[in-house]
Image 1 (cartoon, one colour):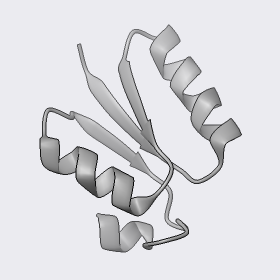
Image 2: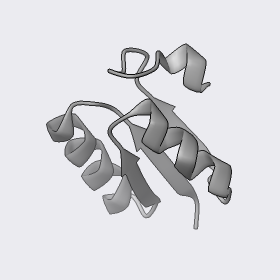
Image 3: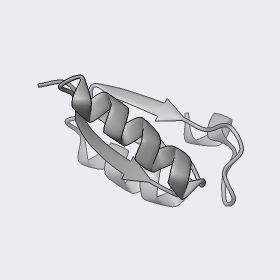
Length: 64
């Protein structure tokens, strides 16, 4: 299964995207901050990161 990390500070958008991707058969995890995303990315095992450029603690470019 393809595992996707959705990173966005808007909880409604995270839930919407997670639901849509899960309905298509993807494994989905979410993060609301750049720090949370970096921690999860360092654990490994992700196939794709959908990243918001305007996060509260880091820019998406910094996370990327």
